[in-house]
Image (cartoon, rainbow, N blue to C red; front, side, top):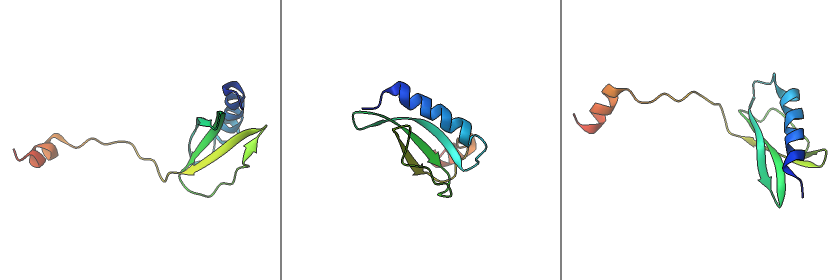
Length: 83
């Protein structure tokens, strides 16, 4: 079982290693079995990571490009509501 503190150390290593990669959209701690692992979200599948680092499982997920949320305009909302 991997303790959360171990996963946090590996996450910090990955953040330092992958900081300049534009295809990495997020790095975080996830539950993995009875312990913890590190998940790396990618905008494309162009990066290959080992299945584990220092015994901590690494899970990659290709989620596609990330864009800022733009709420619908007030005018658009009124049209949708039939006003």
